[in-house]
Image (cartoon, rainbow, N blue to C red; front, top):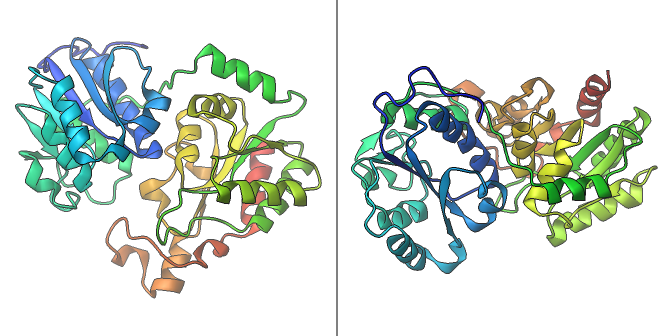
Length: 355
């Protein structure tokens, strides 16, 4: 822990409970909020209700009690687990940082003197029915900045932009073993999560062209990703098409191992996805590929100068609107939107990384 703020302990609650089960990117956005509490309210007990997958990245943070839930078990069982594990505990404040109906129902297994939720505009899926207080309404914020609203409502105005993801020695040893050290490393995480009408994937042929350009600029390309058939197909296409064979780690890393791999890279290329935000949390420059979502809201928080932002172009072409006339957070759900991002766009960012 780096330091404690000057106002440490002033008006601090005895306990806070954070409710943010998923997803991986949003989990990384919670970390500065957690670190701010630890530094400025060092005696406040912190509980974090988190999903099992996401706990694989953050669940070993010292000084935090984690309530790890497997969402596949359903709302009723998760709520019952919370009631059992939290029996007899009443938190001074519950920070409900997830506005899904599932998260709201699960959080009824907790007891708290205050239940803080999103402002009315962001309290979607009926979240406002499950909370007693709301954060201040501030439009056009990045998701991470919005999370700080929960601390402000709880009485802490400080902001510490620090993430400090623990990287255990075995994860570091894995990264040292599988990664060559002859050249700087550039990670490509080609796929986003597969959801209905997500449309965040960029064509594999363009990743091949980018991999060739990166190799020509002196980078060793590393492919990262999960074990899904779609991600495997992308990796196979890139390996087969690239002039120089990338290091292929797709489907071969835990979240901690992925973080250790990314920590050794000079940059990452990928669409709006968990690995983009993990890399950003590790202070690794991210060449984010954004057309279907607005990077001002969901982009990598650090090194935003490397993001390729074709969201305004996509809004104009596929929605027939100007971006500033849309509701904040509107997505462009069109299968051709990502094709507005050109190989030249990405290669120009790689050239800047190589300088």
